[in-house]
Length: 73
Length: 204
Image 1 (cartoon, each protein chain N blue to C red):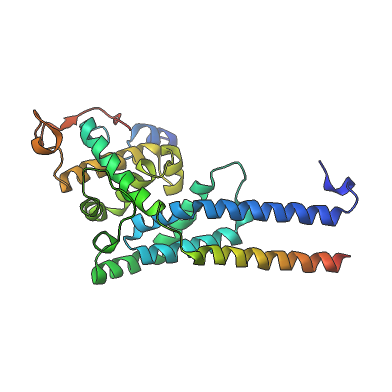
Image 2 (image 1 turned 30 degrees about the vertical axis):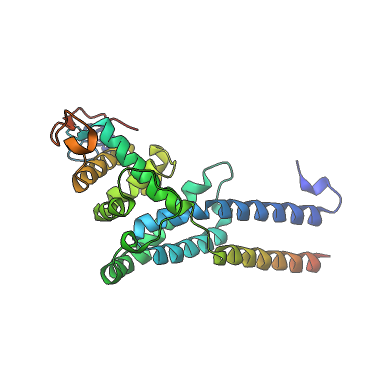
């Protein structure tokens, strides 16, 4: 049996096909909480240090590019 | 279009490069809030999350030439963040959680919280999920990534993602004791909230 056959006949997970699937209302409730958890962090203020870091990286790159441009002239 | 037929070729190229750098930087800035939320969900600590995000930004910057424009920057960044977490942070995460408790117990919440489940309780339950289930539940259920993208990020088949999401939800419902009569209205019991079905999970 080829590898492909094996992949097609064996489920990805041993218990796939025998999943307990939740009531849609429970799923919905979990989905809302999941979004509440995630969005709470997404909506939190971003620490300045990240913007400072990226500005530094960009400045370093532009300086490097500027040097090579000067050299090529 | 070849830049070589435009007179000052060096300058044109330099400007184009500057523009690309600027666009890439703006893309990274836009993704920072999502990176923080994903990192916090993985590590269970806001402090570790921010270290993880910083490492991710540095790696992304250093490998910007490997990002294919037109593909999902979020998926690309999540892949870097996730790999960094599993190779460097997982152990630290457990130590921090052991000594300080998870962010669920400490973090202040921002804005209104309309979910009827208490956010702190939900986070505690989320932190108890096996890592492989928690990460896919977050990716698929909160970040806006598709099952396909989640499968690619984790390096597993889509069926595996679906199965993990399903088990994560079932486990969460169990941990939060939802599916009971009180929580979801009349006519339901914990057992009745579960249905045994075939291989195709009910997605949402």
